[in-house]
Length: 465
Ligand code: ARG
Image (cartoon, rainbow, N blue to C red; front, side, top):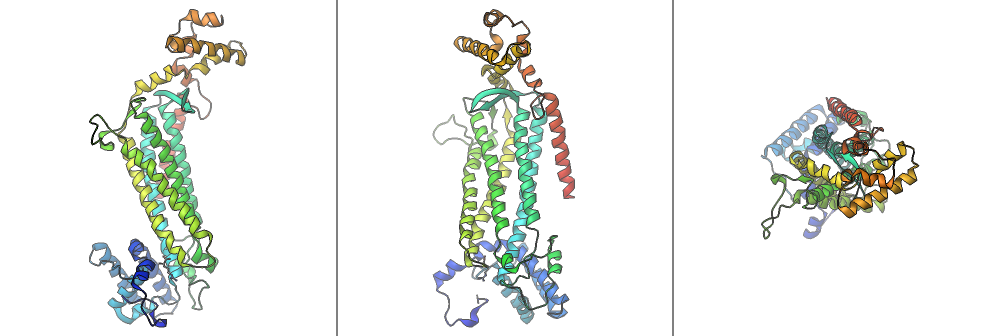
């Protein structure tokens, strides 16, 4: 297939150099965006009288038919073309003749690819947001069902204080709120249209850049500096950074699920549909999906690192290095969407062993702070109360029992402030329910939080309408 730029050359590109240089094998996925950009450009050229209305009409019909044919599988994108831009332009000329050769008036592949990439990224941002929304709906269900499911909260992976499963899930809900805020910020900041920046210095044609920006849904209007327009990939770096953060969140949760699903914890059981077996050990049921999500996190970080590194040495304006923005970024986008889908499937089918969770909180002395607080409320200075409770814990450790099961005489032996009401004061129910500071797991606070999250999801849904 002929290049767009053959005129100045007397020899064809070396075959392996051609393969090295091409991007069609991976940028063909942007065909819809490329056609959308070309349609806007052609309409603008016609409106401005830069091309005739007849040519404009032919171009529009031609582009629409190419898009429909590709979508329907009637036209296969030939990988002989250098890139998707060349493919569509030459296909257009094959279909409509000379009018097709006018499409590229006042445009360069540099502003064209900058536009395509922005349009493509924008869609992926929206899709990522939608999948996080579905995930959050599952998390909310888990919260609603587990306001009273007590479990140990950990620090240093040591049992620390009692929380609830709802509270634990709420922590992730918060992370995903921030993830979505980041996506919305990026969307907003990249909301300017590079089309019309030309190769790097604009053009002498009387282009209406406001018109194309509007047609393509860039409410921020056209970009302000043509050199920046063709060489800006900040939005992609920001998106990869946001995707990396999303993966970090998913990975942390997967790590917990893997631990919780282990024989040692048994807090959860991952559904058969999201586990796999071992080829040799018949008893095994492995948390592969969670492990893979955790594992794929590295790959997404890698894409971010790769693009940052590619961009750091590029002088203004466009350089071919920038073609390297695509493969890793596409891979990262696909990976995150896949991980969000699988993760959501996994958590919506997971079973929680509530009794084991509560038992683990009891056995882990997560109520020791509350035993000390009991003394403090009866006038014992906190440091002293801390040390008395420490000794009680030691007794329990030696006996292999929980604080709840230590006889009252043993309590009294350490401090005569203790009365029988200590058992009520350190019951899981009291420990959790008295935690009523804002953000704490106490029932009333959690009910408030759940209400807030419900409204949040409703608002997010109505924003989209
Ligand atoms: N395939 C190129 C890319 O992805 C398109 C832009 C080519 N422009 C150029 N002047 N060679 O960046």
